[in-house]
Image 1 (cartoon, rainbow, N blue to C red):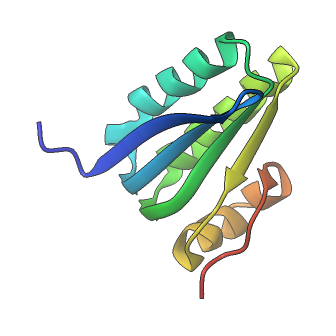
Image 2 (cartoon, rainbow, N blue to C red):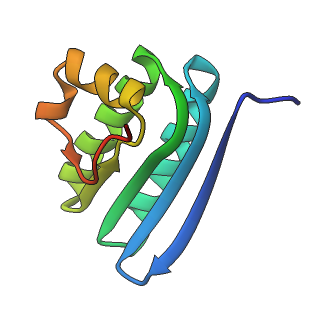
Length: 110
């Protein structure tokens, strides 16, 4: 299967799991992304970090998945941090108002 996105989970920190996304995060990525959030939030980690620095496109289903992950993390008493990356991704988060809901760290690239 030739996907237009990639998802990798790393455990650089014992208290946090990093989900690194790249490519286009849209309807085709939604199920795998939600499953990754659920899997990491069910584990012992205290925080999930979603790294979007290599994402080239983020649509409404991707944004909805981020909001679902955020809500599920709050329900589990865990942190959920998003590293937005590119101006295009940051713009999508800002225009939709999601930047006021999610914990965004890092700066948008120039």
